[in-house]
Amino acid sequence: MELRDLPGVDQVLGRLAPLLARFPRELVVGEVRRVLDEMRAGLRSGASPDEASVEERVERSLAALARPSLRRVINATGVILHTNLGRAPLPGYPLVTGYSNLEYDLEAGARGRRDVHAGGLLRRLLGAPAIAVNNNAAAVYLVLHELAAGQEVLVSRGELIEIGDGFRIPEIMAHSGALVREVGTTNRTHLDDYREALTPRTRLILRVHRSNFRMSGFTSSPGVAELAALGRETGVPVYEDLGSGCLMDLSAWGIDEPQPAASLRAGAGLVSFSGDKLLGGPQAGIIAGQPDLVSRLRRNPMYRAFRLDKLVLQALETTARLLVLGEHRRIPVLRMITMPADEIRARAELVLARLDAPGVELTAGESVVGGGSTPGQSLPTWLMAFASAAPDALERQLRSSDPPVLARIERNRLLIDLRTVQPEEEAELTRALQALSW
Ligand SMILES: *Cc1c(COP(=O)(O)O)cnc(C)c1O
Image 1 (tube, protein in one colour):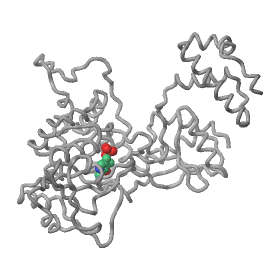
Image 2 (cartoon, rainbow, N blue to C red; image 1 turned 90 degrees about the vertical axis):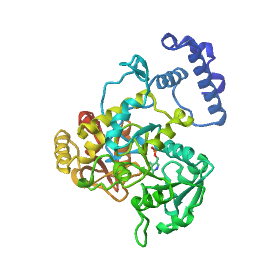
Image 3 (tube, rainbow, N blue to C red; image 1 turned 120 degrees about the vertical axis):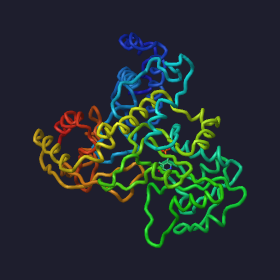
Image 4 (cartoon, rainbow, N blue to C red; image 1 turned 60 degrees about the vertical axis):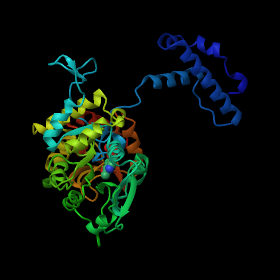
């Protein structure tokens, strides 16, 4: 095709009657112009021509526009809290999208507060008053800003960490207006280091959980109880950023993460943690602790800026209620973590029985919690391993199925871990595996 062969806008529109019936005229015209410009530029630069006609391209791009961009995917990677896949899959619950009693007290017939819906449940789980904001990063900011802006916060040099995606403790501290006073060294910090760094301007002792890495060897740092004792002596509260904040004891499954209620019992004045890590709920940041401190946070104008939307609030309330009622198996993250390897093996055998795939075998392997938590800890699992000279091509095929299936590649094998596949997704997964061309 040459430049002079390109049709005019009106000529193309004449052939697009079905699209004009479906989409606003301005949108179609704009898309036709954009496609023609793109083709003109392509022809000028001598790029290898795409065979598709102008109409086909316009149709394709409008169809893509009409399709949701954020889609459901099947996570067969075995990474339970996969940050790229939205961290925690949520428990199913009927969603209220219309009017609701979000900020209305039905009994009193008067204005109510949105915190009450999840607040009471969180209080039961944590043994202290709690509020929720958009994520744990916002929680850290709010606590530092309200309690220590313009004043000093003590933090160990071993805890000035970076969590994925650019969340750095020193940076968020700087933005909150709190002045960081680093104590100790990277590998060792003692109680006396904190004591010596205290000044009349110290407002908070911050302790940060090293969520995504492990330190070993010549290391030490005081526990929360020791810090809290120092805090009581000097009138400075301890605030612990716990990261995951596991609300169920998972040690029987080899997952060793600090529990917020334990940290509060040990004397922390405040704790905060994410809603979408080991809690298994929506993206949120939960802050709990001493009533006077929590009410100060609630009154800070930034609390209003960070407050939860009604959809998130419903998911948080549902997750918290399931935990209170002991129904952790209805929370997908907790069901996945606690699923025995034997059960995964039995499920995989059933899927394999329905497949006619060459070179596939069941092999022992490991799933991980992920989401920047529990480094160095893993869960035993059974993997379906598809040996192939081109596992990348298989992975790509699975990724383009509907719904997309995401798998792991290790050496020359494509690996499917059913731990992170929800049972109701197995039929779809089987279909996607059957459709693979080897
Ligand atoms: C994950 C994490 C955060 C950030 O939490 P988000 O909910 O993702 O904002 C902050 N601190 C620690 C220690 C974490 O592990």
